[in-house]
Image 1 (cartoon, helix red, strand yellow):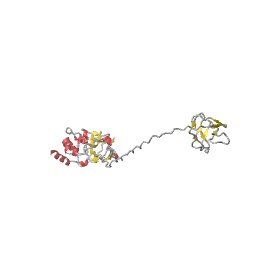
Image 2 (image 1 turned 180 degrees about the horizontal axis):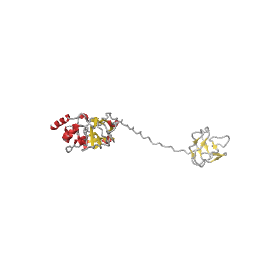
Image 3 (image 1 turned 90 degrees about the vertical axis):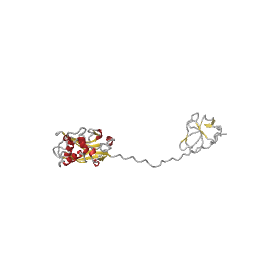
Image 4 (image 1 turned 30 degrees about the vertical axis):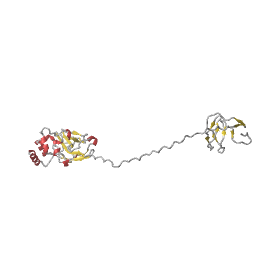
Length: 306
């Protein structure tokens, strides 16, 4: 009750003009009763007096209050509507007014708050500046409209799955003034899409394969004995001679020759014999040089075959 009354008193004393850098959007963490109890009355009063102020003006603080994470402000005090639901690799932006320029380095990072203390940076810095809110000239456009991209899914892993686990924090240091500023907005990763339901298409059942019955065994085929070949007679220069030593039953066709025939190669192997006359019919060919030919009919008064 005492803390609540003190908080209301501090709210009534907020000045109309605030200094330093003001984050217009998205909404940053603000103080509440949990912060008051955690960090103490002086710190609470300082933040209420200047939400854009530096942490040095918040001291002293209670033991266990860590000002280097979101200026000590806690998730328990934040409305659920201030938590941004985001996705890995999403492009983000902050709208900032540099009301009192101080200059100095600044950076933006995604912080895992569950590790305690100041939290842990997930991946690296998402944006960095050598001279933020510079003391001379206009505020650069990339600072008043500060854009950055969240880490990818592989970097984030299973972090930031619950509201309050992670914040995007803008940290700004001003060496010339020995002041440090922290601004945080809460983010939570969108739940992954559920896997598609299993297919309801029935499995295709293959038709049974019928193996035809084997045909009945046939009786063995008896090959008739080969008849002895009829004696052959060759004519060389008009005289009969003994049959050649080997019969060849395959010939090579050439120039439209007859498809089949018997040829004798005198004492040779089964070398094919070329036939050059398609109308010659069946012949016996003597000699390796294809010399005299004996036809199985009488040729114009030559030796008859009986």
